[in-house]
Length: 312
Ligand SMILES: Cc1cc2nc3c(=O)[nH]c(=O)nc-3n(C[C@H](O)[C@H](O)[C@H](O)COP(=O)(O)OP(=O)(O)OC[C@H]3O[C@@H](n4cnc5c(N)ncnc54)[C@H](O)[C@@H]3O)c2cc1C
Image (cartoon, rainbow, N blue to C red; front, side):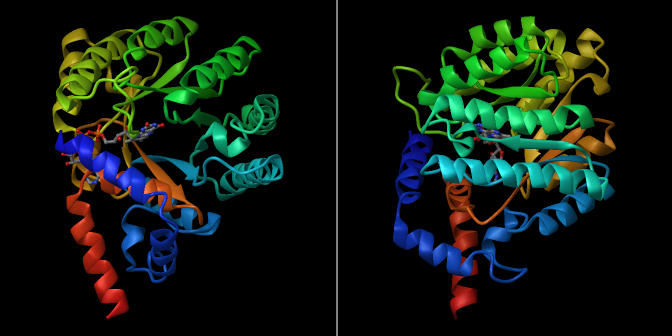
């Protein structure tokens, strides 16, 4: 209940213009500013530097240029061009070739056909370079259309792309079967959005139980699945399932967010598992940042300490 209330509260705050202005002023100003705990920086250069540091520790990474729900097609075009530049910059830097993006960033809620065109441009640049593109999953109004676009482009022969399923949604176990049958790569998450009970489990224990069921299927039947969670119980379950079924550690990966449970990330690498860190960067970091606070309200104390030390 508290989980749900805090998620709702932070999702509401995410729409506050005043808070956004305040946070933008202080959050990334200095190397020690509070938002830098979760955001790698505002520029591609900072993201590449963070990626290099991650790879030096034996982990891999996926870069996410922050931004969602652009206001018009011109902004969607601009976001697409930025993604093309990021792909070029990553190739040039010689770091791992993997990005994550949101379809509303490419204009999905303005015009679906334009978003598909934009995604094709990104994939056409990425595919020949064996550069992997993950379509992040947004809130439930976009689930169907995201999967539909993914499945259509898969049928058109694009292979360097994967999708995300959220265990919070009732539908996801069925989606998992269908996407697995295609042979596509799935990232499994619990789900970061506040969803109504018509489509999603409301109790954390139900979301966790669904996650556990889906992990079991993915470890044995998935195609290089990504178990994306910081939950030690789910990580232990994935490890146990793989060991029990003789699935080698190279056949799947764990994924965690930049700045979260770095201890667990390092331990898994030491134990011989693959761990990919999701590295968000860019100027539009506020909604992402607020979702992270909503997941763990104790992060707020950390932020408040940061703000008082910055302004004081
Ligand atoms: C790589 C990656 C990609 C993701 N992509 C998507 C996506 O496309 N769509 C989507 O809806 N969601 C996405 N998410 C977010 C996900 O849905 C969850 O909201 C988030 O991962 C928290 O759930 P959890 O599985 O870590 O478990 P929880 O049960 O929420 O947390 C387990 C433990 O992890 C730690 N923890 C979790 N969150 C935080 C935090 N913010 N700060 C500090 N500690 C924390 C705490 O120790 C907590 O006890 C992604 C998550 C990851 C790791």
